[in-house]
Length: 180
Image 1 (cartoon, rainbow, N blue to C red):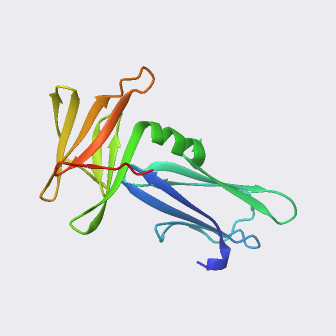
Image 2: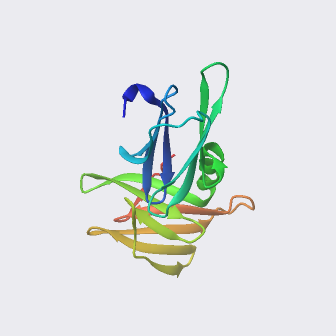
């Protein structure tokens, strides 16, 4: 793929990881190439129609993604990414409501922990964790381990009518700040 043909780069955070999507569009040949984390997933050499869309999947759950190619004026084009049938902005906004993410160092390595609030599934660096939930006096705790480290996510009421539930990640007894 010619680096000069790259016309769009997007970062998409899913529970199983962060994916970098690159799109190359040869506006004279119609060539289309989609890379996810540097790996080619779509390659079309000759396309007579320069506008349209490319649909592919991202992540271990095959989340549907579509790149829309629209003509502006002359030989300029606009590219937009849709994830799961939603604009990237809407998808990110919706995910922020149903997930909470922490990024921390564990044994000198970066660790990305994601809580799916709707299912209470916990992911660490793309792996779904074995968990055990328990009720405690002020809420619930969902326990799991990262290596030799004891971890849990504590869910407690915010105490506010509209505040809902607040989630905290505790690793070896220490509270970890949320990733924004």
